[in-house]
Image (tube, rainbow, N blue to C red):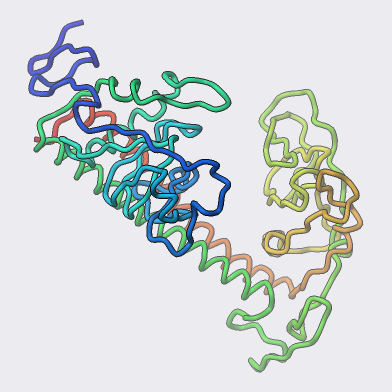
Length: 400
């Protein structure tokens, strides 16, 4: 294979001529953590301590930075572990193998984590490079009761290394895209919380949309019901009054483009739809009470119920109400949660006139559309970041 001008062939592939190949042990001092034994002894822990105890779950539940841990170590616990000051790079080597993270608090690490101390290269660059090869560590791990790596494998792993100024430039570029992704994730979370609040307000009768009131004079008139206080012009109806609850059927053997909906959502495809109208499918076994809004042909499997409407309703309104007031199926005498048909038929829901149902559903649908659009933008930037990592960390594309 011909190597283009300005590049060279190395043990790690083709890289720029002014890049080096180094083992990880040449870039930092790599130490494994330690655990106080027996770990169940409460004397090792102290909730008032300022030193966190990093568990694998703390690493997997964080993104680039670790700023909180579920447990903290006592002075005795610290003496029997490995102390790591804030702003150090650590990596999990057990269970979730190869997940790097930068500490933003003083911590201690156990023997399922290593620390890269006193790095001789840009720490953020090293973080991003380790992130880019996370899935490769699994191939090198040792399989016992759970996957793990040893420090020798890590220390001898070779990486391509640009000059320090280029390391910094690459790290800054990836940090910028990370900041953009984080801001979008924060915005989406905020929009979801706003929608949740709107659902609670609009679907539990605490707030009415402009133009809707009980006496036609914008005066709020309410009444007491089994579901609490609702507007005077709303009804309280059992689901069985507005819809027939029907059982799904066994999955058909024929293949096609019609989705088969089971207890955990779509799990197959057929060419024989069971229903071809807008409805709601409800989990009957396993994920009892989970609901799916169906606006095209589908085939509800025998682990679900589906609704056949007796009167005209806004399906999205009913769906959103069931979504925030999910039936649990806890009344069933089985080891697996199982929703009973009668429980669904007797479910009570506040039922406004059809125009108000539609208005409420439209407001919530607009919120859903905004969240979905932001989600697509987020996915796009995540793909952009992935492409940047593949090109910048291998030298295929250079910024300086």
